[in-house]
Image 1 (cartoon, rainbow, N blue to C red):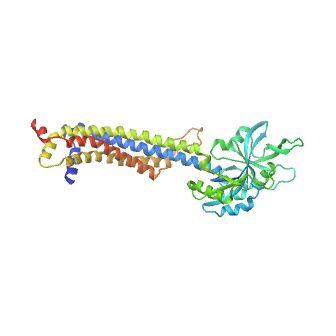
Image 2 (image 1 turned 90 degrees about the vertical axis):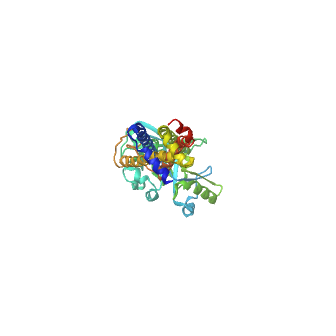
Length: 410
């Protein structure tokens, strides 16, 4: 094998009349490097977007949600310690959820009311990190008779309705008291804006309203019941298994949903987009490998006499084939290594410095970059395999040369 490597290396070093072949080798190397670098940067940015989106979704939603079947959960106090002690569960919090209308300063907007326990949320949840004005403890602050209880609004809702901290608004629930005629009269209650939160997701910041758990129970006429329990698990990607174990342990009166199930469409679209982008960028590397085919084909034509002499001295067809496979692989491996180094360096620059500023219409202000070891390995293997496949045809053509025919006209 040492002989094939030595000869392949010498063929790469162009003489005066082979400068064009060497130039094509450099172009091939640069093409592979550029393709690999592009793949690393693009997939790192897409992975960064995906992870950032997941973190924002999970900042508002729980990993697993346990609900009662067709009715509110009344025995949640007994279930909390039981569920919290199950394998894979980090915390369990009760919550109230309902559709409402927010009215204030002559404006109105549909919204989602969420009642949370401020102390449990402060300890386990992410709401405290999202508060932009006010303090999370203000949700549970005592109020005097006749005083409006506190509420937190999303920054987008507050902006659209022109509300600031201290403004008084009305929350309207269609599930109010039952009238003597059997219908329901909407329930209207006055609240005071205690602060705002920002999740980074427009749909949440423009529609979510937070109040304390006890006040949400009173407003939604739930008594001592809650809508369900929100669980946080130690492994995000095992949330479905935790959900199944919890529901199985609690019995048929309860059902559950996990964050992957609730965001299946969005997550599937992200995965499909990433896979499609990987395939498209592989085609970029494939185009670069055509230069390797061209280079090796031209070397075979240039070195026909030397190949014939080498074979007449006892070299096997396999040895001849190995010469050109090594030559092509050397170009491919060098280009892949250069692409890896430059791609990772560029990712580091994009991550460390705000080189690319995004418009305000996006939920992030700069490119999020996250390099996954699996992505880097897959890109490297794909590039090397494509370069290897590009060497096979020229190498096979060289091995099929007949020494007698090649030397007859020399």
